[in-house]
Length: 378
Image (cartoon, rainbow, N blue to C red; front, side, top):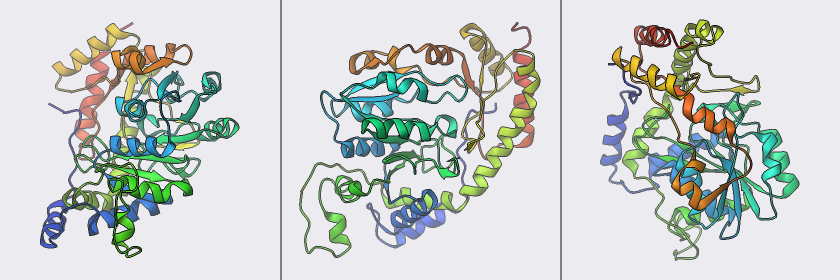
């Protein structure tokens, strides 16, 4: 059986974990945490990076920084993970779901302005599959209406939009190091802060609402509770594991791109025959091969293809159930216009296995399995 995902291990993770244990500092914000944060700041070219125990935590911190609350509205795609919405719904904001583009499956920038009201405070673009949203236009809309932009760059590490790292463009962003991501710590994430006015407060939110970070730097002689916050820091063992991954981040990206391109080439005849649609990556984007998906003709054909792939030993997966169609989406949000593309994609998308240690033979087997699984669809 070829699994959908197999977490990659560089081989140095245990060495760094042992180093962290020997250093007798296992709580958050230790040497490995600081090393990882410096790497992110340099790689993403941001003002501040703070490791968190999940991307969800990073998004929640970003929501706090925007100051949204009851009566405010936040625009985002419905085709995203629930954490994108939860982060703002937890503050009492109403989520306004806008449709996605049919090519990249990213937030459709041409539909955002029609969803803006006098209660809108934030736009949250989600860089689906590590392919950048049309950030120039999104930022222009935000500037016209004096809105904040928070990038959900959970899938975007090492990817760029017009040569700018994903996560570096909005006022803030969050990235993920979950087991399914290219670079992983099992669970983990980071808050990225680009808006200078948020830097000091971000550190306070991160340290449970205290100015402990300033105390650790020797800037004050004691720390105390001064704002909202929570325990967002990961422990040093998580950071030590992550550091080993960061050291191989470029090699990981290159290998995944090789796999992605092999899929793309191998499945081209099926797209030409009208049996499926392959991913589309605009010229402005350099993606990171986080995901390889195909769009089948309809929901029935997707179910058939998944079953046929499973019979051949290939585990393929669907993806998000559109949030606007869920009970939580109806309770905490509303549509910001028609969501036809979102609904169609939600029924037709299948993700193929892609992981760093995947062999060329496994990739070829998946391509063959998809060719066989799509026979007779039309």
